[in-house]
Image 1 (cartoon, rainbow, N blue to C red):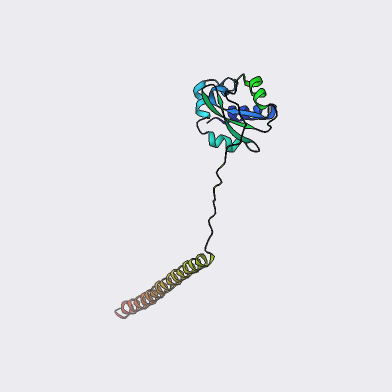
Image 2 (cartoon, helix red, strand yellow; image 1 turned 60 degrees about the vertical axis):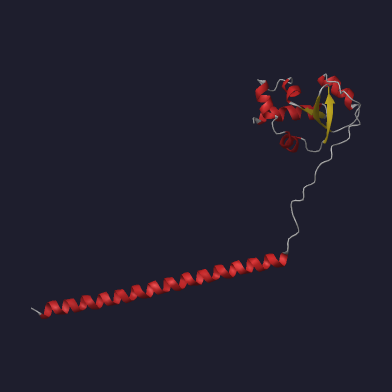
Length: 167
């Protein structure tokens, strides 16, 4: 999706008229796109466009001829007349311009804090046990290495004594 034409279309329409018709056929006539295909691609996800560019706007669906299109508007004053003046599109049926009902999604469900705290404490305890086990393992390897070094010194000393004793 190319951001520049779609951003320019929404910004120009909302800032100059106070409304925008979210429809690729009508938008292509604005001249921001080089081809109808690019315009159709930009309008493929209308929910995302409305979320990105339609802040502080009311949304409703209107019928223009044989199609239904989404209308974002800031003011109801003479809205049908203004749409016809700007876009040359007649709103087919008498509209009350009732905003579409928006779904409110609950993103945060109630959390059982006690269970969460117990789970976190259990994970922390498990991490601590693994850490202590790694430390003990490292300590054992270090002890074995020190013993090996001591034995190597003893063997080297014995080897030198045997060499010089045989002379």
